[in-house]
Image 1 (cartoon, one colour):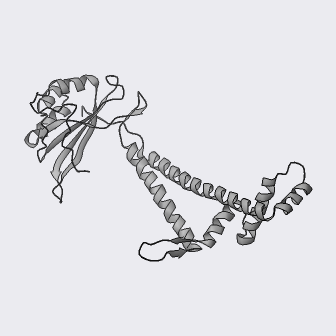
Image 2 (cartoon, one colour; image 1 turned 180 degrees about the vertical axis):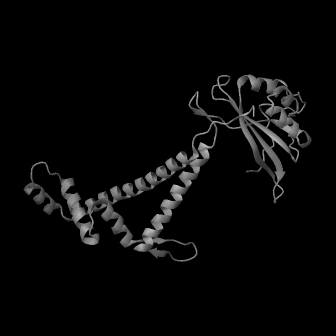
Image 3 (cartoon, helix red, strand yellow; image 1 turned 45 degrees about the horizontal axis):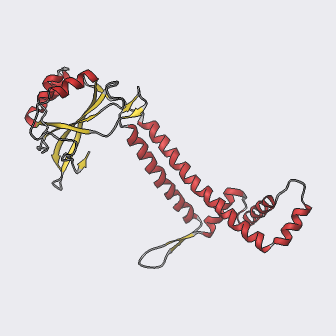
Length: 267
């Protein structure tokens, strides 16, 4: 076809990157909680055992600080409670203590032990899942390699009547952008069925290919307008100019202040 396939980043790699980002975010949340836990326990130990702490500090080797002694004391507490020190011990300690899932209609539901680990796994799954989906979706969007930037949001060019859509696709396929442009109308109303034409200009306009998207209009089960993408391709600056220059003028042509009738649902 004359309309070349859009340049997109690898969705699988982007999805993996999104998953790793989600895991990192979740890990950072618990690291911050661990840091808060350390500060809280250190404050309590400092207040309750101030004299003992000063005595131990005086008897310690040179270079040992009060924070070092407090950290050692916290690790001892975690080892006594869980058998593990540091961050792992903290995770096990908080799992043992558990938490309470609140409900608006009644008292909270206590969760601890294995249930707490399951809850954390669900949390991680949700965060990683959202990050993965976001990365996958972003990677499917056209990317301009010459400027190393993503293309902007699609702008509506116009509409092709259903009885002309086959001819329109044929003109694109045969590289006849003048004839294709002549079949586009710029009315604000959107006939059903028909083809909606959208354009994403290159980040550096005139220096790289632009993205053209064709979507079929229909009504979903709720009688709302729905778009289903049937083609996404790229046109050169010269081809784009031929297409735009041949679009017939209309009394209802959109201005910068007008809003097109965008579909409620898009698939």
